[in-house]
Length: 616
Image (cartoon, rainbow, N blue to C red; front, side, top):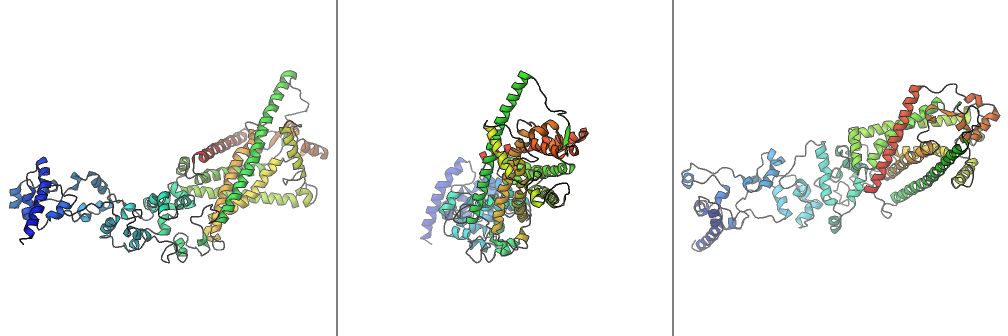
């Protein structure tokens, strides 16, 4: 007892040296020494002096105890401490937290208030505090994150890294947008930091590959409730490496993990590369698919954009030559009845083209925002549709329309080759004949003559019923249906196809569908629009596909060989039109045509912007 007294007096002196100046400065009415005379069984002088509050007087927190005698008499008693007087930011965060909603106050976590030491960023202390109440922590303590924290790794995720220290927000209903967003957003805090991941030997492209996936694109567009987030596959607290048999992403557990969303998942289905990239060594199939599609894109656009530019310049020169000739010699017409109308397309052709326009615009407007999900305009598009789910629904309706007109094209092709009586010849003669859209040797000559005209080396060629670029457009539909349509069906019904195809086939389908769609939209909205409407001879629009009509002068100048063949066969009268299409009909389809061109060109601008400012 005699040995303890000097130590107690020294500690008290130290405490008084710290608190008395503060008390005098703040004009406190009660000397802390007076408090300690009665409360030494509650407050250890030495521990309090060493705590984070050691430089404060007792009445700094117990502000209502300004009347010492009243307190001694029991008429003035301490009230619950209001930490907000000093800790304004922390209190404000706590006030908006789920802890506050459940009446969990500061002292419930900071119980040892008189001995509280600074945590100094030691994550173990946070985990110890949280696990005092949250008894479902065992999975976390055994996880990669928990083991890292216990080992002293400052990069490893502790409770507050995901849930915050004081502003612990409610997660809401299990399927709410807030809850679903939390499943991924908290993971991105660390895993998007490539430097942090590199120094910890963690797969450092997880975020990029996730964001490039269908799941990640929907998350980025603001609809996390529609797709799987990080924690759905890796769990929230029990995150373990894939080679651990307890891990949710271990090959033995993948079927159960995938079946949470895809209830018919199979072992084949789980072969999907969740974080597959274009890495040649790790994912050679995806790499070579990407190379093949990129080569197709670059080659197709390269050839046809050069073709369009040459045509644009040559057509401009030709128009100037015609203008000069008119100024010098006036208008000389050598064709009788030049404005007499002939039928080029039937109502069936016009209707099918109408389906093409509607479906293609719908597919483009709903698909491109997903392709370029990192762009601000993509979010605007999705919000316009109401959600990514609505956009997907519209996309699939338009895909259904595409299958309808493709089926009609197949039927018309079979009818043309085998059934119709008005076309002479057998199957092969019809297939390679002048009325067929199948390429033949004449097309080589037409391409050669067209290039010679581009280069001022020969006259402008005339054509048969179909030009080589029109045949390319038609064949592209067949290629596109197998590439876009086939891959689209796989992505539309993954569980069905996953029952007999390996999961990595969906990775391949995603690349093919995405790049082929980019090829289709880019080609239609640039090359096709130019060939059909933008070339100098037709600008601003050729309406023949909308009303099926073309004047005699245009017929002879552009498709002179077809005119001669019909003339020699005596069948020209079969294609004469006695009256033009109606006013309302023309108004509707011309409005549709200009609207389609405007939308298409606007999407081209947005795509160019995305490539210039995006992560592609």
